Image 1 (cartoon, rainbow, N blue to C red):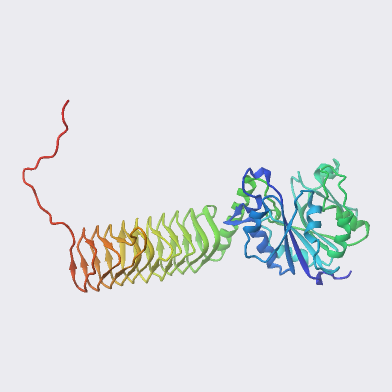
Image 2 (image 1 turned 45 degrees about the horizontal axis):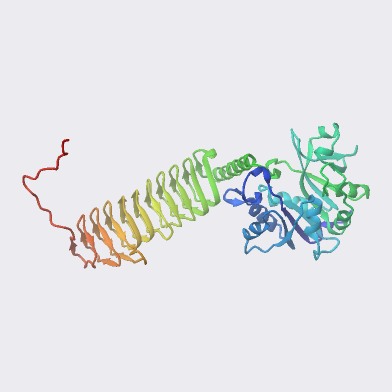
Length: 461
C-alpha cells in the first residue's frame, strides 16, 4: 500500500450551521468551553497538526464567526445555502492548491474536546480514506459504520436511511474524516441528494472508495467525549464539566491539592508550583501562575495573575492582572485590579481595593481601603479607610508614599501628592499638600464640645 501520509495536510473546518437547538442569538460555534469558543478549540487543535492550509466554512452569522478569529491565519469560505456536509466540503476545497496525494482532514467546529494526539493518529494513516469512529451504547441519531464479513468498512448509513438491522450497529461515525485530495475531488463531484434529508452526504464517499477497492481505515476512538459534538446547552454544560474534571485530575496528579475536583474552573492556563492548595469554587482565567506553597482559599477568581511563593489568597478575593513577589497575604474579600503589584511580604486585607499601584515590602493595607495610581514604599501601614483620591473627574493623578510611613484611619490623600519617608498622617485627615519626611500631618477640623445641647425631638401632632 502506498504511503499517502507523506503528502501535505489541508484542514477544512465546518462552521456554517445555525445551531437552532442552542436557542441563542449567538452562532453555535462561538459558545464557549472553558472560556474559549468551540471554534477556537477546534482551530487550536488544527493548528497543532501544522497543516499547509486551514479553511473554515462559514454561513449563519458568518461575519461574527470570522471576526471572532481576527488575526488568525485561516482562509474563510462562505456556504450561503446549507446543502449538507458534502456540499460544505466541496466549497471548502474549491480552488485549493493541493497535489493529488495531499490529504484533506474534515473537522467540525462544534466538537471542542478533540485532541491533536488522536488526530495525529488518524492523519498518519496510509489509507486513501481515514475515519474516526466510536462505539456507543446508544447510537441513536448517528450514522452507522457498516463492515463486511472480513471487517472492512463498506459504507456509512445515516440514522434516517438505516434499516432495522443496521440501526443495531454500535460503531458510529463521528464525522471526522480524512481523504486523499485527488480521490476526494472526484467523489464529491459524484455525490447525489437522493436520501431522507435531500442533502449531499460527505459520508457517501466511503462507499465510493470501497467500491473502487481503495483502502478505508477506521480509527476507533476510545474516548467518547473527545468526539462528542454540541447541539444544545445541556451538551455544552456536560462537556464543560468533562473538560474541567480532566484539568483538575491533571493538576492533582502533578502534585496540586484540589479540595474538590468537581468545583474548579480553569478558563485558560493554570501553572502550579510544588505544594499548591486550591479550595472549592475557584475560577482561573487567562494565564495564571502560582508559586510553591501558594494557598488559594474558597470562592476566589484569579485572572492573568502571578502569585509568588508562600502566599495566601483568602476566601472571596478577586485578582485581575496582579503580580506578587511572595510571602504575601491577600484577603479575604480583597479586590486587586490590573497593575496591582505586591513586593515581598506585603499584605492586603479584607475589603481593600488596589489598582495600578505597587505596595512595598512588608507594607500593610489591612482594612476597607482604596489604593489606586500609587506607589507605597516599604514598611508602611495604611489604616482602615485610607483612600488615594486619584481622579479629579477628568484625569488620573499619582500618589507617592515613602518608606516607613504611617497613615491613620479614614484618611484621604488627594492626588497628586507625596508623603515623605517616615511621615505620619493623623486619622481623619484630608491631605491636599505634600507631607515632608518625618513630619506629622493633621488636616481636620478642630473638635469642640457644646455643653447642654439637646438632640432634636419629633413634633407631636
